[in-house]
Image (cartoon, rainbow, N blue to C red; front, side, top):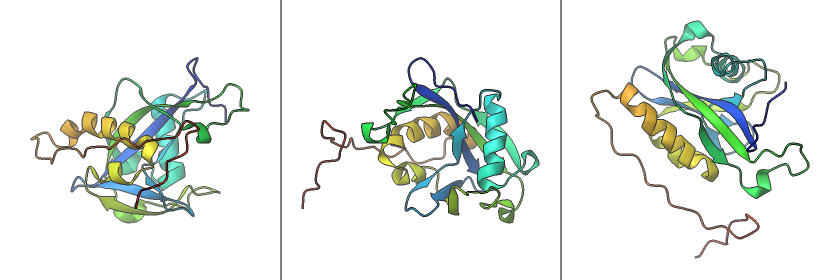
Length: 186
């Protein structure tokens, strides 16, 4: 695999927002960890974003193109920066974050088609359907804003009548200069 990092230090990536017939979204639990997120992954140098989306769909949640319908995608690139402690400083070039295209998909197959064991080292070990804005509350703090931007951009596709509660507010986390979180107050 050869992911390209652009001149600004961002790695191209695709995100997958999979919905069911009830407009709930698939949220996947990171293998061996407490974290939850949408499936996502890097775009290889010989792939289009759509090719990468289908590859990640197969690798991470075991679905084939026939299992889903593409409803839409974000544009232009949505970006997020990694906190300093997550950057690999010795890498060349240094990746400062990711730039993403998010795909909104509808599951056409039954829930049982979702398989997390479709690759040698599964990224996820559990999944569940959640309400539309719930992923913003559950994803790691530095991805909250990009999740919110993607969901806001794609909401009119899934909810054309506008029957959707307003998005959650994201509180900004204070950080120390070294990128560590300050101690919580009692």
